[in-house]
Length: 621
Image (tube, rainbow, N blue to C red; front, side, top):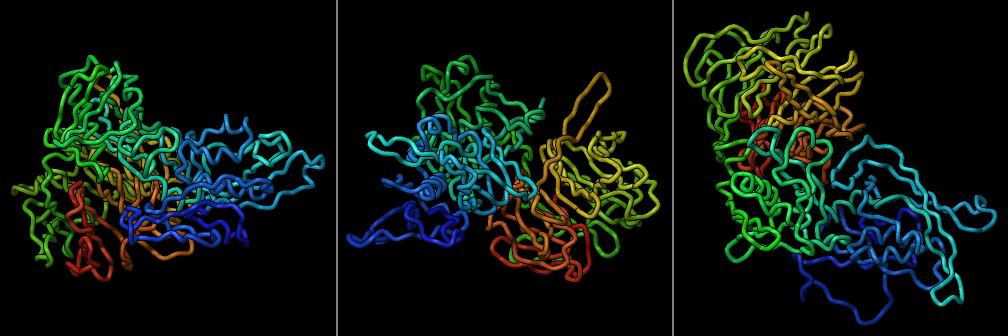
């Protein structure tokens, strides 16, 4: 049975099923399990949420199986690792087996599909039976491996079975002749079979990379027979997902593919991964080839099973096109030369910008920063520190004015770079955010003129960002821009709902005019009824504070594509109003928890108090 154990929901044990093997330490080894040599085969309950060590092997339909068994067996076989889904196709008619394309798409349901009894009266000629399938749809995965969440909605489809002659022509057997497209999986089965990896492409016209998350098979892909490394490289070569494509470029020439027949890629004893490409790449060399290799190295670093210190791109005849090592690829990172010990900042009880030293087991007293935002007399309500930790932007306590100043040298506070005309402080400027280009972003929440602004280099003339989705009933509560400057996380209120949206940043220059737009918003936390705060936590991961319908406030990690897992929930904390995460994994999360003040969450620990009075904790960005 699949990891969702549909048998329990149908209220009976079935005569069909799958064999489930659970690996011990990742291997089926002596001492892990023993195989009985007698007795009947017993149904096996499915694995827990997303248990990647569970292997599911499909079982072919038995002779004279009734139509219920055919449908149940096929639904289970879809959850298996069966090469080519050959066993699953045995439940289909010859025509359906030829036309069914499991690689085309995946429909992800909250739990495995519920199969209802067939309505025999609906087919009075007894030519077949239709079995309704139902569930709660939460996402789809398209042919480019892109995960696309949806607000949970009813899923209603059907599977139709008919009788066809048996192979020997002496009888008839039930088989499926009509079914939903692609794969239909419960979330647990999906997470058991698939994993998220980041592909990397270059921001349009720039020399730094942008993460593009996709899902690949945990093990060998049943259709292509490729191992996870080869699947990942193939997905990279296919190009960016449709959502990200308008804002990024790939250095690989159009039509570049792996050399025909390549299904396995493994580093050699020098930790070099050699990637054989087709003739499209034969003439590439120099800097374009280095950029191609950089895309590969960044993409492979999410695969912990691959220890590739460098990659070598090979042409169609096996000739070496170029080599690039991890250290050389670092020049293409969105955050370059970043101090591994990133420093968080916050606004103290007097409205001054302070730096926190939260490394180690004990949190040291906060440090006063230089410049007017740290020593001046203008109280701040929210802040943002640039990636180089040399400048900061601060919104005054009443939300009207946005200031930018050095935090390394003393100087007078300059005039505000932007001001809001809203009457109420809560309707004025949001907390600001820096992108990796050094541009500053802030939202004016004025109901009379809502606007998203970008300040070039933090000091230039503010640019109105085009936001065609920002209608009269929408309001940007807060924002955080990614380090690469291509994506922006927005907490948006519409009516009574406050949701988290990810927008794509596009820039166009016509003559002397620069047009900046945020387009194609997609939900990043569709299951949350209300979102309070968000922070970037790496190239494609967010930390989100919010509440699901009927639930309590929680803090959890989410991918920018809206996907999640059962292990992403962080220890609970009451009354969180803001949260800050580092770009890397070595530094702790920091949050404003209301009555508990500023607190931190170090890796493997629980929340600990740092400062009793403070607000607006941020890491650079």
